[in-house]
Length: 490
Image (tube, rainbow, N blue to C red; front, side):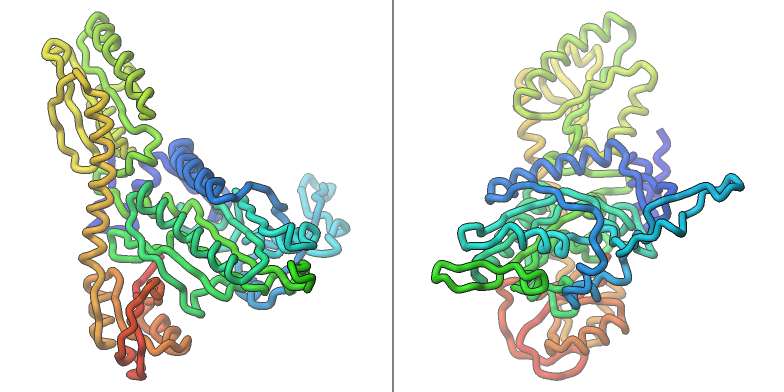
């Protein structure tokens, strides 16, 4: 099987695209800027969904569903929110097509909507309009709701999984009686995301707050997890927003508190999307293809028989059938690939490309010796292992691979967090090393914007529990009370 993958050191962007396409994760669709997520790519998303969905339920949330279409007037009710999304909105203006009499299908000009509908870029407005009917008293709170959905943001420059006009995500929207409860919810969900990123995706993340310039439109505070990809660029892997009472005031969502006074509700929203699949690819993969952490791999173990005849295959299959049962009892997903249409070498290359963590090859001589050959995807090392107790060995090996993938990503990040004490040093590090650059900033949006315009770097976050230290801003020379993390980002 010819992989034809560009080296990541030669052309990182092409390397990424090659893996997405050749590992059968997704492809471009007939609709500009949109993608088809193929079965193998979608199965990774399903694994992510299953883990996150359980985490949401374990923290008291329930799933619901809200409309795809949002009346345009809803967006005008929260000024910062509409300004943040105005340039990305797809708008429905008509509701009918007709034949023009010459065999052409056209939009019926007589079927114009009284009010245009926005195709959901995010759901705060439609949900808070709905919550108005759900909340009267403090007894109705909190509302802890999550939605799994698709959203549309009209992107001009797209890249599969990372930035597409339509993508899949989950969005949590909660309503609370007090400011403190809402802030605690915002922080709790950030913890859920960072736990998922580190313990399932094997992706080390920095937990922090966004600056005012980078905050979600309509939020008072945005918390985020930031990850580092292998090209030294940052990727925002999840956000959790404290919305204050902005949306409750915009949509008149009030409640009677325990003292009998009427107050506006406090709000949060939080979400992650299919860009996490892009993060997985860019954080862990190599020039041989995809590298998947075992906890999110659709196939954790693949077994390939190497045989000379039917009797040989039957003998191997008897052993494999028993092994498969033992592995499945341990909760390990396994595939036995006994296709006779492809040679073993083709299969080895295919599963390496698709990032299957463990590959077992077993032939006639292995059956005689009571052994198998095991190849681990993360290090590409091969070893001969006894058949006896093999399921326990594999279970331990999968844990070791998960740990090793995380360690490799963590070591890379540690090597790419660097301090800069001048603007020239900041620019030099961004151009020649990349990664997170820890530097002093004067705290003003103007300075932040000037740096962004000049060197295409943004403040990714102000890390939580950031130590305060006196210094001077690398750009303006004005006093600064702390360092923040700059990076170029996706």
